[in-house]
Image (tube, rainbow, N blue to C red; front, side, top):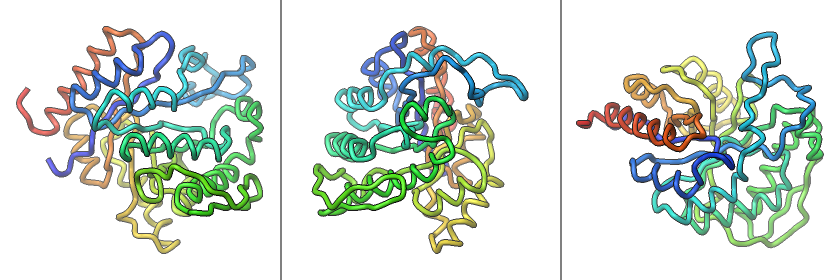
Length: 293
């Protein structure tokens, strides 16, 4: 069905879950379009920052899989090596917690070696203490992200790359390989609210919300208005929904509203439960496509 978004999988891959290689083979065998992985380098034990998944007014215990996650880019490299068509996504990369020059090299190499299969979900980072351990002050992380992405794009695009920013810079430099896709992988920003929507319009390709809703039309409108305000075509907005609905009709409706990719989330670290969920989601995909079971 033409309205249907490309349906992929996102999962916290840890030292206790299926390996990236086995997971990737199982995901591609079920004809999912993509596999997106999140990242956290470490979790400070202080827990001063409230987990966004907490109940209102509470600081609920952070699930311990946050501190057991495998490295995102290393895992995606292994996934790329054992798959053929699977898109390799990040949901999300905490951009201001990285050296942007090295990060640009890693993504360019991965995209180059996999024939242009990389999609980058970009995040500012919700954990204040974690970011500060990386030298990313919480109140500066958005501006840092903009500078970092400008550096990455110049390194991907220009024969002599350069960017001078308030928070990150690169002197005139040569850098290869260039990504397989001209200009580099698409970058979609996670988060909500007017500041995020303005950031998307200024320097990103699209938006990555976490939403189980069957309609995002009301939330897409303000982003499209921001696109128009800076002279960009709203129809060029790329939308990747993480934690997407598992209702086939809801997935179809998201596609009609302009969502290009919908990611179904596997929360379990247990191998058998992961396989069961992948089978269940494959059936959702078949139903949405109108195919026989």
